[in-house]
Length: 252
Ligand SMILES: [Zn+2]
Image 1 (cartoon, rainbow, N blue to C red):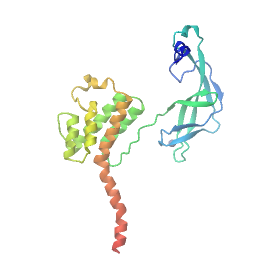
Image 2 (cartoon, rainbow, N blue to C red; image 1 turned 90 degrees about the vertical axis):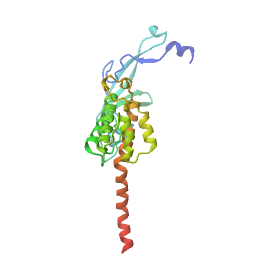
Image 3 (cartoon, rainbow, N blue to C red; image 1 turned 120 degrees about the vertical axis):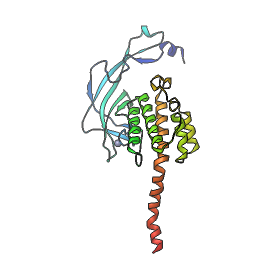
Image 4 (cartoon, rainbow, N blue to C red; image 1 turned 180 degrees about the horizontal axis):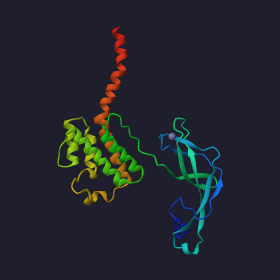
């Protein structure tokens, strides 16, 4: 870092809430922006809706280095607007906030947030509902709530299959008596701290520092386990069904 950069420090927005302006809103022409659709999960270039304009607004910043008191605060321009998904089957609307620079627009945030993909076919309703709730909580950045719902989904799975053990981790281990699970899945479950300690969840410190990464990993693991238990058989059945007409033809 150069001396000047050290003296200046980092640019810090005075208000960290990107939805609050530090000046007036001005209407401006909306622009196209690339993002992954939270509704259909496809990547695409999102267009403005009809002639709906964006609202442009300033956000003031200061530098946090030793020179900060000597410097005036500056402002960057941001835009908030509505866009729609280019996928003809989706057309879902998304609210975007982007930072505007002279030559480009950078997406800062959007809502609703994309939910993790989850296919619930063949999974018993109670279990699927729990995992859906875990996914929804993850999307709302409620990571502790999300991992609690992952636990619930896995508890229900063990109950449904009759797998018994002292704690959830053990019960998941016992699942192999009833279904085929790959050793790597079991190893992954073993790594997931939140599956251990069964007693007194409220006091368990495992939940204190749950991050997005923990929550994403827990959901991913639960999806893989449920897939192995309920959906692989379904895949075999579907492939068998595909084979039937061919077999019939040969027999004719
Ligand atoms: Zn879409």
